[in-house]
Image (tube, rainbow, N blue to C red; front, side, top):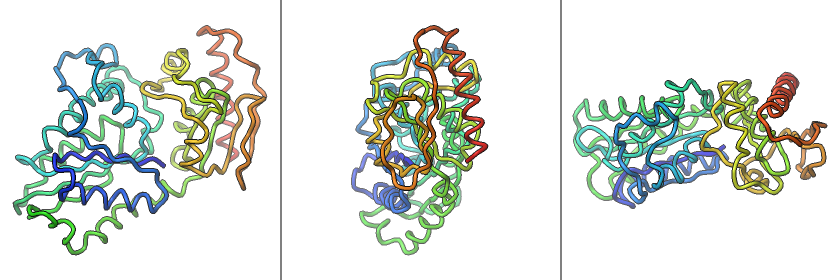
Length: 322
């Protein structure tokens, strides 16, 4: 389970940072791998409203941290936690830059009709602090959060908003904070309880990611799915995105992961070796499946379709069994 924190406050050690770290620590105690991003420190250019992403699925701006890092992290995340102080009833400008640029992900879903494989299980949580006590203090932020989480294909499961938080240490002194956080994190218990499945291949760039995507589409309510390579390739095989787009699945902004990285994150209950000769690690209690699939000798869309369809059928059988 990967939880991504988005810290939107310019103050690195202020009340927003304390609130976010409290939530991320609670998720880590549940077993999640966590990473928090200091958004004001990232080079994120503003959306220019050019509609390029609506036609082509990619942002026309390609030389900033949104393209270089953040789209990939948002796609990898199982849980997204956004945190901000309230500035004029909404997020900080720095966090809003990131939110606006997720128009690219919105476009891939609603203009190009592509489903993020992880979308049926990804969740989002909004955290906010404000100096005043007005009853409408968080309405603007929560409305923005609703559409932000929709764009990144996350179920908006909850929001924590705290009024009259202004002086240093106010959040740390807030009575009941830990109980609030525990109640929000408890909403995710079903995610943490899912059986963990790893699709393993030699480079993790072709059959494994396709198998994982099909499995997530079919059974992400009960399976936490990862793919990995023994010696992971730096990039996904170029045939994978168009092949999976034909099935309505979006493989953009994803990269193969090395086995060591994935095993540091999960203890698989099931390991599926999608390449016949791939060595399978010794993981205590894991159920092992070997798929005796012929090597992919031709790198064409036509040959790739036959492999993809074979993988899809095998995943259907596998998810029925487990």
